[in-house]
Image 1 (tube, protein in one colour):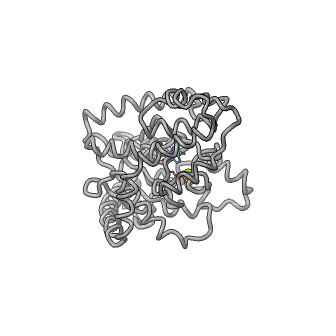
Image 2 (cartoon, rainbow, N blue to C red):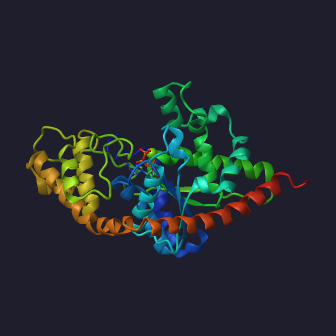
Length: 356
Ligand code: ATP
Ligand code: MG
């Protein structure tokens, strides 16, 4: 998909996003923000511009932030959990390096919070198998691997994700564009739970998505940048690694560099990366490169990424040298998340089964 294809739904979400950001600045205490990532590899610049930057902004505006590491979700489409300990601590290092503050934010892995996972049972009763099957991620997986190979966990994970969001009554979720259908299901589940068990006073809020200005950054092969796709520039990459990664990015043979997301998605995506890193418009980056061709474009992108993330990388290297500290942050976050989830589970049981 081109770098900036704007569907009406996407534009509406982005417009709502601008007014939500203003509301958070005026009334931060009215917001509880939950968002998360799969521990399937190091975070990349798509995460940074798609969601991490918004998380830090909201935290700094004074809203409460919870960041969830989706370690059950990581095993929906891979069989081995051997890399999980490394990848989970890697995510904690990425978070702290970009400015998530463990004194204010709660960072935890969802497998450690039993009470959160129990919400899956009542929530499953609120959706049909057909509804889950229409979820684009599940649909893609069924199309790619065939329904017989799709695991029960993969099939139910949009509902699990609703539990991730609703267990803490989050009302705002900063995500990339790929997450919008999941969020819609979380809203549906909240609404149905309220209608069925708490009609007089809605118990769960209907969470809103917050999209950034770069809700779908493309990777070096021109498809969505993803940690599992071998097409990303990880935040932690060194300057040399970044140069090598960008050197193999797909471009085209037109020497005049122009920002045309529909016609030239790969070149436009590289321009967008440089622009995001340097706070300029992609058009002005293109104008500067002019007829320098792909080589000049790649040199510009490499320089921009390396400049923008030098401090983040240095901080991340320091943090990674102290895994004990990263584990401690996770243990503290888990404790806070468990207290919240326990409270929610007790209320859910009371609402559902108040007669015994
Ligand atoms: P995987 O390939 O393992 O699914 P991923 O790179 O897609 O990894 P996730 O952990 O699935 O990352 O997503 C974490 C968050 O980052 C989500 O909110 C998602 O919308 C956002 N995100 C992921 N990739 C991008 C991207 N290329 N551009 C913008 N946002 C993104
Ligand atoms: Mg993903």
